[in-house]
Each structure stands twice: as structure tokens, then as C-alpha cells.
Amino acid sequence: MRSKRSAAVIGVVDDDESVRLATASLLRSANWQVVAYPSATHLLSDTRRSKLSLVVADIHMPGMDGFALLESIKQWERPVPVIFITAYATQDLLDRSHAAGAAGFFSKPLDDARLLTLIGTMQQK
Image 1 (spheres, helix red, strand yellow):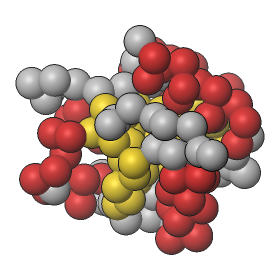
Image 2: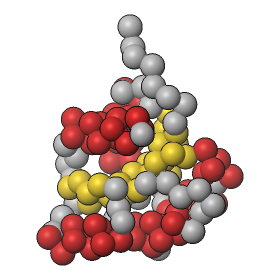
Image 3: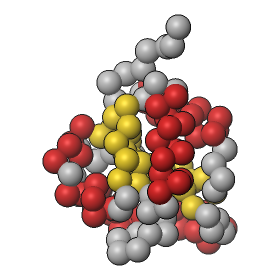
């Protein structure tokens, strides 16, 4: 029997389709509701974005990057936490992520257990 999760919806934003699908699948396997987006602009233009309680976003994407997405989300009436993921993890990016207010920072390939633990902790609050 699968455990029940809250009605929280997690947005996954990554221009790399394989990473986007794998991350969404991971979260769904842990019984989270997920909406996947190929870009930050797709998320920001989605009328369902108000249902999101958390966003997992790639940092390096064409057009609007993860930092610009985070800044846009901070302007929402009800901002949600953003967890960054990147294939190009550096100490500078980690520091910049913390300074920008990201709720988490993960290098690719993702540490699935660590990501699920962080999200579970955040959603219990």
C-alpha cells in the first residue's frame, strides 16, 4: 500500500527532457503530484502555477535561467520554495544559490534519497 501525500503539487522545470521526465517520475513514485515544464517561461505562463507548493528547477536553461525564475517566483502573491538542480555544480553556484534564497541545491545526477528527504521535510511544515 502506498503512503498518502498531501495535495501539494511540485513543479519540475528542466530543458533536458530526460532529466525532467526522470525527476517527475521520481517524485510521482513517492506519491507527489507533479507538473513538468520544459522552461521557466512555460511555468510562468501556466494558469495552474498557483497550485504549486514547490519548484525544482534547473539553473542553466536557455532563455530564463533558474535564478531569474526564482526572482520571478519571489514576486508571486504566495511565493513557493525553489530547489535548484544543475549539471555544472561549483562552489560559486552553490554560494549564489544560497544568497538568492534557494531552498536547496543538488548536482546532477540527483541524489534521489536526499532530494525526497528534503522535499518531505519541506512539505511537512
